[in-house]
Length: 244
Image (cartoon, rainbow, N blue to C red; front, top):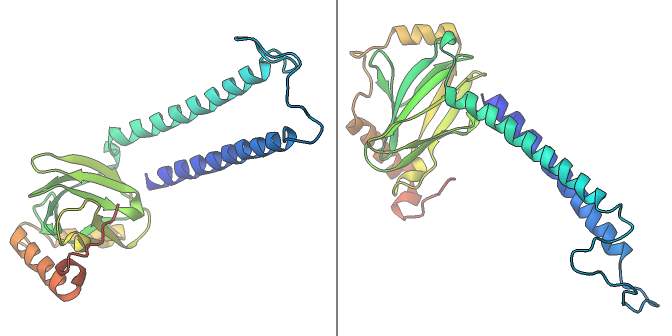
């Protein structure tokens, strides 16, 4: 899904640049063509009346053509974006057996709960398999996001938000909070580890509700406080790095 959004962003960027170049070039051309020059008295020999179209321009054909082309481009872009958003809202394809993980934001850490009850502060997912996240908060408003996968979801107390993504390359990425939530906002982040499918299945088979894990928010908060005390000088001095 992140590939689709990256492609869409690239198309919009190219079209926006092209439109901007055409508009600016046309403005510069007209500014030069109709610049003030010596020998012109600046008066119109036959001033236009209210509602009258200028002559010599094809009776407004150029205006009609430009409006029609602009409308076609805008409608096409809106239609394309709508189709992509419908696909996003539809959720991950059920035929691909997506992994469903619960995400809870707690000042100032993220907790992930897997279907077997295993809870951890590190998100592990397999490569090239859809992952559905159900996001909420245990205290204040947060926003969960993984920039590498173009994913964001509001974490609201008492409510859930669902988003899905498909990790397409193994590696370690970063999940973080994108909404100011307190003095430790800048350190509210966690690792997202994308594993080989076989490696992930082996790891998942060794987890469970009874496996050693960070199974409560108190332990997570304790770990985060240690991070703030050891490396988050900006938190103690209220110089919080706000990320949007």
